[in-house]
Amino acid sequence: ASPKVRAAIEMAVLTASRPGNIRFMTWDEVDLAQALWRIPAAKMKMKRDHVVPLPPRAVELLGFAKAWQRQDNPHVFPADK
Image 1 (cartoon, one colour):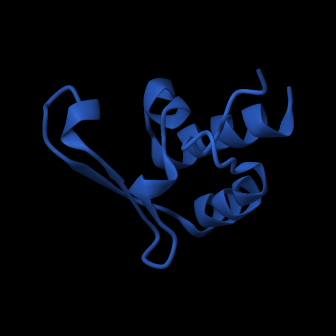
Image 2: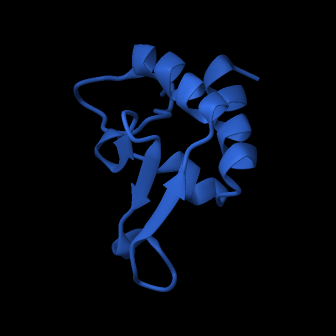
């Protein structure tokens, strides 16, 4: 698997989040300074915001993912295609 896929899988394990939430995670939801990921209500089944504390390894992974950030795509783990 590519580094992006491996990082996304590890992020899912570290945060106990659903694959769809990981796949569609955007940079505006992530607060690296506070180590929090705020998933908006519109993306949640219960229709309320969900705050996920990020363990140190998840923050480290997101630091690596910054290198993949693109101006035309807000996703943390953008598709290669």
